[in-house]
Length: 448
Ligand code: IFM
Image 1 (cartoon, rainbow, N blue to C red):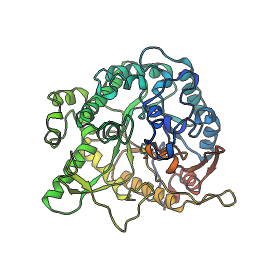
Image 2: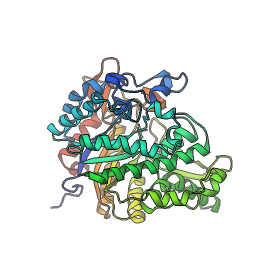
Image 3: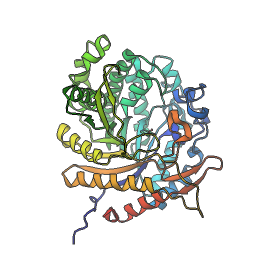
Image 4: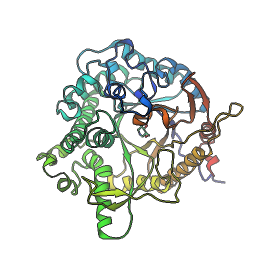
């Protein structure tokens, strides 16, 4: 008898975190400060004035965390490297102690039989580079490739998966267009320059890797499928505009070497004259694509919502997570099949998927989070449906292994399948963690 929810052999069952969100000790052992260190220490930027100074103390507790991963049966751990630990000034001098931290982490993972899945950039640009214009300075492509090269040389023997950037859309949109995230700028011209420079940096790092890398390199994007609020032509056009800026811009550049037709008119003078040439120059073969999926967007025309003239319509009556995102598992299926149809058969990994909910207090050591269990179950089922529909999906990473520093929300939003008591650093596996362990152990069969 066939098992309906069995996932392919070799499917990676993972959990994800990022450096600034979990490590703590941001300046330890000679590390240089990042834009998030600076941003979180600026009053008014982060809920409750929270910072990543301690976070989950993963920098010092990583061995215990790896043991926990093993207990859950994870076969992959997606983490990011803090650029400023390795190159405190962002360029030039390598900080051996910073590099050694990642060597030890990767070694511990390998010993536990867990695949290290490394991301080179998850939003924590060294402040020293921000002082030189950060992602708006075209030199950033070379800086990033040089940094990447240090890691490839140090760790490529042990790390089989390298992702260049995490969510370039958020880096540009949150960091430079709307300013809710570090470095907190609000300038359409800067945002566009950042978008193009991010993709130039991605391509430069892929080239550095191709020079002598042995394993696999890819890009991680966040996709949010867009659906029209009505069949009105204005809403259909608004939906296309928002899909262009969020979902197509980065993938079209990386995989097709072009940019969506909708964008030049929206950005007007801010749109670079050499956009087509830059887009053509950053197209690269990728070994994999990482997809982060959380929710969908139902869009309507809104002339006041610049620059895209589109705004989101709240879905009254639908379930939403604690961060206000609609729970819509079908969107995961839709975006996986959309990627296959538009970009062809690049191997896919879900590099993030998960939900923030306020957890109830532990009762007899058990934290019951049925909403998160439901979220994970339905999204894993959607992922399986996509595989059955022919999508080459090779792994899934839940966001997140641990409750952690949720950027401008600080510690107020909990995404972990493992609860972190920030006062004591005690970890408690939530019911969702137990559920995920069962999914892994049964290779998906328990989703039936
Ligand atoms: O916490 C973030 C992560 O750093 C990037 N993707 C979305 C997550 C939840 O907001």
